[in-house]
Length: 302
Image 1 (cartoon, rainbow, N blue to C red):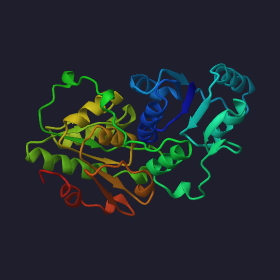
Image 2 (image 1 turned 90 degrees about the vertical axis):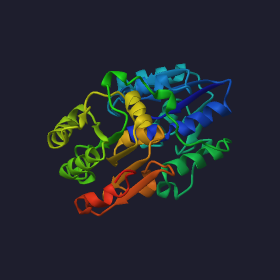
Image 3 (image 1 turned 60 degrees about the vertical axis):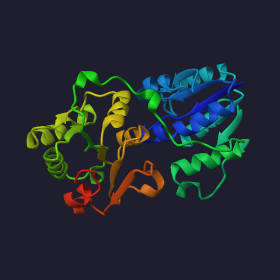
């Protein structure tokens, strides 16, 4: 049997799809399973034990007939017996028609295993995907576990007691970020307890890491220097993690790290938050209203 799984992004959504991916692999143990994703997640996807092949969707525009034709040819060449669309977007639903309407788990019109719950958009991502899979005959989906993604971090030469900090987030959504001065103040508190703050984030967030490192001398600034797998390993090492509603926090929680995740009114944790018994969610209408003391109270060494 040939199976296609579609998960294009973003990072947090990709991580949360790994539980369903594990369930699909267990249910179709002898199948050849291909993942369709986008370039930023290809390396992580190829490390996953759930897929035999990873295809990159270059996301041709709907006004790019040549690009769409090439994508159609690649997808049809796979001769897939069933597709699990875990992206469930307008784009991925369009692929149902592009591929000639194979057996399809998703929300595409006319899908043979359509997830038609009108309340699906009001469900947490994990609950929504679990219900989608049940319709397709897969009874249970585990929580995401990214232990398989861990990579060596010895080259960072870090001390034993670590507090991970993810002060970044979508550049076009500054309202989703706790003030960087508050992250720096929290780092100072951690250092007083002989816990080393370790700042992670993308290359575009290096200015945030620089602020924390300037105000807290013991802090280690790894912004722009970590792969997804190294973030997983950092999560497995750290005492705790604190961060905004951003993709790396999903990696960290899926690594098993206790965490505090900060939300403003710009996003709803009941729909998207990483789930774990060891996750604390703090939410304010504006994150500037959230005090350092309130965040510090969730730490195991405050």
